[in-house]
Image (cartoon, rainbow over all chains, first blue to last red; front, side, top):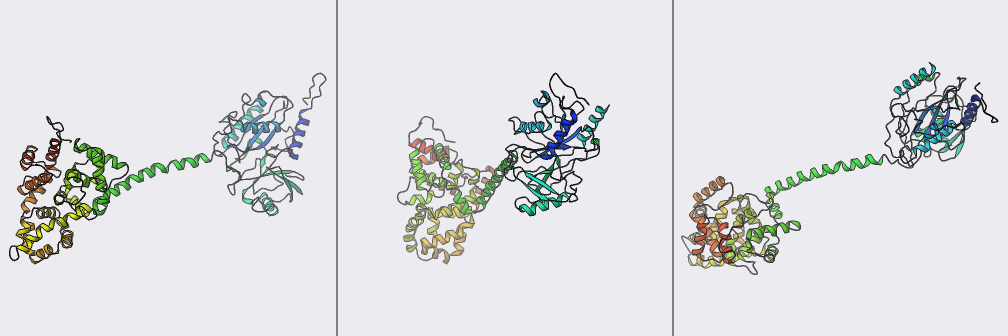
Length: 161
Length: 406
């Protein structure tokens, strides 16, 4: 489904790509500071994912664990997934109200390339936390996430419609 | 099944757990195998595939299977709870309430900022606490004669202010070196220094200096020193008695005072012995001091006994007559008190013994009696004003229109 090809280039279908990312997430390649997995193992479309970023050292984010939601729609990986922070965070590329990562402010989402993976997004966000404009921002305390969950639900409902 | 535990420092180790084990049991197992000081169970946070594992859930519920890896990290806040995000429907996500974990090795830059603010906050409190302490010091100065004497010994930055005050009081009559020498001779006591400036810095004790000890209260009122150091006139009298003991100059004055009285006392043996004291001008000054503050009578008698036992014995033999002698100018003392109360500040009162006493003090400063009388009444019987006027005139400074320094 959804497999298209340009002239002479092999295109990996969406499901195979997501399965490959799922396998990589389970194996734990990397330093362990970013990790991700599927939200619902029963979802055959593999759209909803959860990710975790451990704050990099020497920043205000050190010692904090940021939990994110990544939503890969049916056009992934041709289009970037929507990334939303579930944990409250104060970053220049994150909307303070909704926790959404703004593609216009985060180049990896704004200039999306098909070769990028969800792990690349998480690593990129972690690097963004160490950027000069973000490493010393005052961070809010962890609070209740009910409002954001409802926001996400509403967003999902709109997507379904 | 075997599960790999990865740490943030890049190392990893394996543990053997059951799928039905609880996350809290896994943490205890990690604590046992790795050491309770390396990974204490209450500070561990386990992350599996982007989910923070809750303590009361099982590995099976978190979809941990064989050869999976779990990331472990430490939080400084004990028993921090984290909710798992596993749910059947994305729209039914549970709330994630989590305490902010802190790495044990290093502190983030943000927490030091609140540490700086508490350091800043107590500073105004300390400043505020200093003011009541100063007020308490001022209050205790009023009550304690010894503290009162100590507070008059200026030093450091106060010395410069005192020198300026004395220079202004003299109106140019004294130069700075003279003021500094007088302060040094008076052990940096401004009242004593002003007295020395009026009578000359003593290199040896002189008889007139004894009488000049009396205008110390008046001299204190003229000094623009802090209000705490400037009590009312009655409280100055015990201070004068207190100050006269450690100072060498005034301490020698009583010794010089009574040799004059001694021959008279021995010549007039028998009745009417206290008439000698009555006619002695120095003793009348002491009696005036006693009348101003009766509390110093006992220390005065003790001092008198040390300097001249014969006079003390004479007083003891005629106590009734001595008491009458003390009470004779009662009317003058009462007038003095009334006038002080009305004026709100101590000043010379228009009573004959007081006027005569002031005139004699001005005479013993080295001026002619006629000149003293003229200036005294021209200055409306103000002894201090007359003294300043005489000093200005003596130095031929601004003869045409001499201005008082005040």
